[in-house]
Image (cartoon, rainbow, N blue to C red; front, side, top):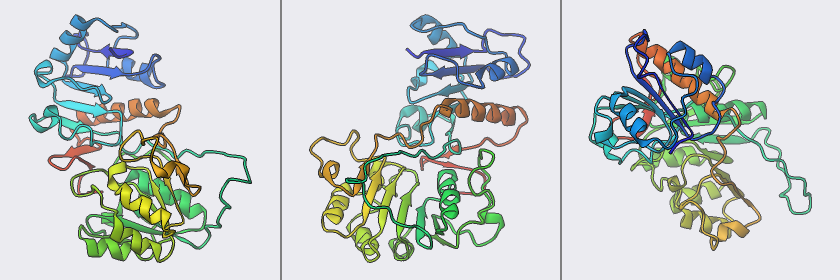
Length: 343
């Protein structure tokens, strides 16, 4: 079973009206857990690993659950009202019965990520760096991760083009009302030099036609699957753009991407996610000198789980106060949304 399994269910003195269950796949308590335990009367260290009867009992009575991708069956959680996931993506859950066949509220961990940088010292084989000053970065999906990309890119002197499904014509509509780590992102939506929107190919192509670097940071849904394919790479190829994918591999048609890279249309690609995952050893992408591949780790850092706990605590506070939760998943779309804002 999981390495951390903590519950407030047996604490009848807790002032909070919900039965909280925490299931996380790591051996040590993440930073911030003890603060959460004290605040919501979670036990300090009753290790329940491997005790299926205890887990079954706790799941039966739980009303709020913090978990990773290992979710219980519907019959195991008759009283569950809220599930806080430890990841920003939702595509692995959107078709599970516990989401499709219940009224349980799901919240993602959107907003807790920070960018990671790899340092490689090999001047002979490493691609010659390109000065990004004055170039245009297009961010496909301008939610918390996309906004942090914009913050970093603006520091490099890049022009920012944002793309969202719905328009952001007013300053009010550009505000990020989701969960934000202090000192990160673009809370007021002030960084983009241009803001594009739409759900049709024409709008997308207009956005793609003016950028030098494309960063994909949007969720995987039925409407975004293979959103970038042959026609899109041909447009990007007119400026020999560089493609970065830190969202989900299936957002990109990898056969079309491979063909575009082999044909010299694109400057290169950085892929933290692929389709499928793991990327098969026979994939031609492995041996391309202008392609960087990492195994879906761009959002991982030593404080990642601690940030998940912090977000969970914030959502518990909002629940207690009768306020709307952060990162609630919009029914039928599998997209983490916030009031009045769709990424």
